Image 1 (cartoon, one colour):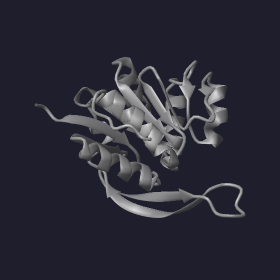
Image 2: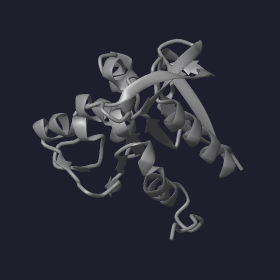
Image 3: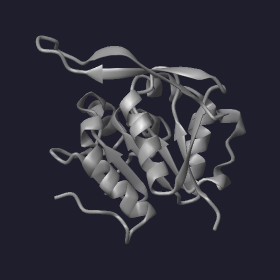
Length: 192
């Protein structure tokens, strides 16, 4: 049986927990996560959290992770699905034409696209949120709605066709239930 690969797009300032959690869970279920970045290198990830008295999240240095391939080396035919984690990375990755082309190619080939938190900013730039139900970090809501998307609340995660979105890393239980139901419909444990 051929190994089933999932492409993860990120870069420096990607959210540590969203990237590592995805990589570990995918491996646990027999998938091969492949991390693509602007270049093959060791990336500096971040941790976004909330502190009492702050009006927005704080950012701390997170783990280091090696990318497996660069965006130039991505052949979308090799992958079953695409994952767009959050952090600050999507803020600049959405301006990389290679990223937008990759995302549009996954959509054009009717493959699953999973995006969580700020990863939804890449979906917005790729023009994939119009008339779609979208869960994302609340401060991305304006971008989603400005591009014709329907922000869902209070749902932690939502599926609309081949697109699955989640609000934040705190949404992992709901988000990954949908993700793994897409990838392995009969084998996903339910969360009670």
